Length: 514
Image (tube, rainbow, N blue to C red; front, side):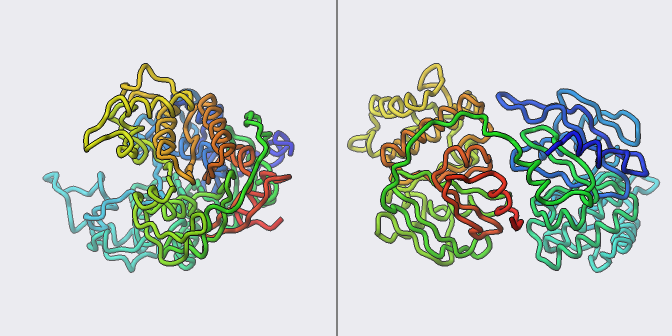
C-alpha cells in the first residue's frame, strides 16, 4: 500500500475544519538497546476520536507516556492549541489539559468518589482548608452532567465496579476541564452493556469539544467510535487518515506491511509424536475450552493481541494458576499441577514475560540464579557444592553466549538481553521435556535475539519441545512450526507455518473475516 498517498489523500489537518488541539511531530525515544520511537507524528482534533493502532510493541505505550509527562522525548516537538509546550512531568501534562484513562484506572480505592475526582485541585475555603461540601456538590454536578448521576460522591471507590470506576476517571478529566483525553484499552475489562455506556460517554466528550485518543486492538470498536486513525509499526508512524475512507484490510496491511528482515536460523523440523496434550482447559475469568497438542521437537507459536489470554493459559499449564476444568497430559500420562514445583517435577518449565519480577533474583549472582531450581543436583547431604553450581551455570550460559565479567556478577547489573539468557539458562538446567517461553525476546537487542533464536533451534533439534508466546509477527513466522491464534480467551485458529503470512494472523487475532 502506498503510505505516502494515504497520508496525503486522507490524513492531517487538510481534512479537518479545525486546527489540531495537540500535535506531536518528529518524536523520538530510545532506551538502552531498544529504539522505541523514531520520528513519529500524531495530531488530535477537537470533537474527534483518533484511533492509535499497532501491534504489541509498536510504540503506542511509549507515546502515551510521553504525552502524559512520564517519559521525556529524545527529539521532536509538542504543541497544544498551536503553542509549544514541555511536558516535563505528569503535573505539567495535567496543567496542559491532558489526562489519561487506562485499562486499569489509576485511582485510589480507599478515597471517596469526590476525593478521587478533585484530588490535587480540591476547592478550598478562605482559610485554605478543603471545602468538603463544595467538593461533594461539584462532584455531583460533574457526574450528573455526564449522565452518571447514579454514582454517589461519598461512595468509596473500592465499592464501585470497573465500569463506574471508568466513569469516575472521566469525571476527573471533566473536573479539570481536560481538553485532551487519552483512553488506553478502556474496554478490556468491560461487559457489552458497559462498553455501550462508555461509547455514549465518548460521544458526550466529543460534543464537549474534547480531543480523544482511543487505543484498542478491537477493530469493531475502532471503526464504530473513531473518526481518524494513526498506525504505528516498529516505533514509526506508517499511516494516518480518516477511518470512513479506509477499510479493515488496509489498516491490517499498514500494521504488518514489512518483510521479515531479521535472519532466523535455518532448520529442518523433525516433529515427532505428541508430548503435551491440553484438552478443554478453562479458567473462570481468563480463558475457556483451550485444546491443543505439542509434539516432540516442535516449536508451537502462540499469537494474539493484548488480553487474548495467552500468558494466562501458559501459567495454568505451568501450575502457577488454578483452572476450573480441563485436562493436561504429558507423554500420555495425565497431570494436574497445583504449583510450579509440580510442573517442574513433571518436566514443564515456564520462562515468564516479566523477567525482572518473576524470572530472576536481581541481587544474586549469575551462578546462583541458574542453579536455584536445581539445588538437588548441586548439593550433597544438604550442603551446596559451589563447584557444582559454577559448572552447571557455565554449561548453560556458554551455550547461550552470555556476556558477563564472571558468573559471580550480580544479575541486576546485566543488560536486559543477558538477563533473559540467565532466565532461560536457569530453566534449561532443570532438563525439562517442555519449555514455555513467554515473549522470550521482549526488550532485548537484535544480537541477543539472534542468540536466543539460535538456541531455540538447537533445543528442538535435540528433541525438546517449545511453546513460544510472542507478540512479534516476524518471530512467530520465523520460528514456529505451527501457530495457535488466541482471541478473547479462546483459540481462534491453528495454522501450519507453510505459506502463512502476517495478515492472516492479525485478521484471526482481531476477528476480521478474510
